[in-house]
Picture 1 (cartoon, helix red, strand yellow):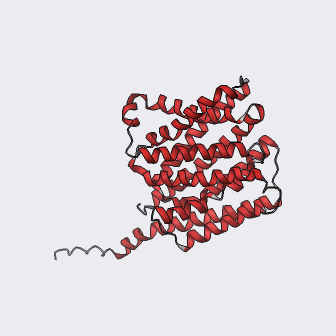
Picture 2 (tube, rainbow, N blue to C red; picture 1 turned 120 degrees about the vertical axis):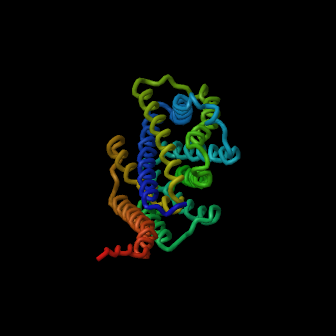
Picture 3 (tube, helix red, strand yellow; picture 1 turned 60 degrees about the vertical axis):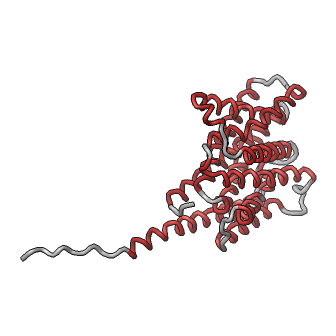
Length: 308
């Protein structure tokens, strides 16, 4: 992976955009589950993505359907379905910000997994930022409080599954068409949930139908942004920025569900944002350093000698 600062900055921006889309999708899922049921939300998430991708890539479907990594694509699909299902089920019992805070254990898992399985460097800056962000998450979760109920196992499971998904996506990287990864990541979920749907089908109201459409669009956009981000930047470098989801989840919790964060949530969120900003600053600065060194080391152009 190149240390091009343009790629680094773009990868970070795409990751933040993806996380915002994911948290907005989660808010839609919680609203759908409140009005209907979780299976309806999950089916909309995956089937909507399949339909949107097929509509967009229809002229070159045969090319997009070919994959160089069939086993990894199946693994990604299983991880994503597990992560989404577990997280959506947890939303039935926990607040949006609380569920997001618990799932935000995944950057630690991604960073460690990237070092163990992908050979990415694990320098002190990344360790410090991940540690600081984890402290912020613990401030919000408050071990021993009511947040740690059996329902907390749902977002914890989601964190583990999402880490596997992110690492597999990073390993595939730019060697696969992002639309190919987008198609296969939703195909398994759509098939499984379509088989389950008859037992859970509930004729949606206009509000629920619009929420299902929004959920499908947000989920597809989030996946595409995430795939592009992980093809440009290292998983360990990008991991802390997933904590930005705490901010957007808190926002949607207040606006949509009237779930106001307490003082600990605000403090923890500030710690997390500070850690993310620090990583962004240091990584972009480090990415520029080789280019600046080359410029300084380059010999000065010779001054032409003018004839007398």
